[in-house]
Image (cartoon, rainbow, N blue to C red):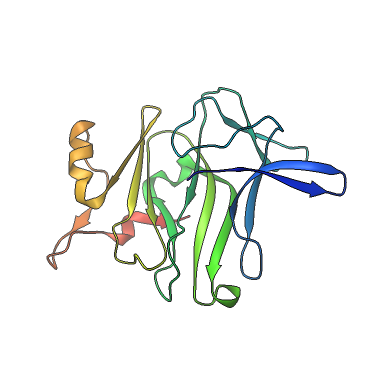
Length: 192
């Protein structure tokens, strides 16, 4: 997800921040304060950025290198009447993921039509995260983000075998093709 630095006028002065999610009824804006000299962030791995915390405990983007990994993931898709956007982790890896902040967007009044999530995560260890986007692309395969040896690899269900062959690892979750359609065994995944 790409993030543009926003400049917001507050009672006490200017606040520089990145925004994700939405403001309004049934919606929650996730914003991350940053410094005035911060630049727009392109999607991808940025080892020169980290998350610190403000005096009130709100996550903040800092331009500092450290050994921690943070991920900002969004399930935003198109307008929908079905197929909410949801982020999952493998059930066995839930202790390796800490939710630092959450936002969301919604379709229709107060999100009664559909919703999508935005999560800021601190990730440690070897983790697999599944992102199912909301919207008109319902039925589109989920994106998988595999965190391995300090790197993030992306794939979908269609090319998951290729990725795990490249990593010389066994796939850590079960797949079912009993109906002729390859899909995830849902009990393996926990909604974040």
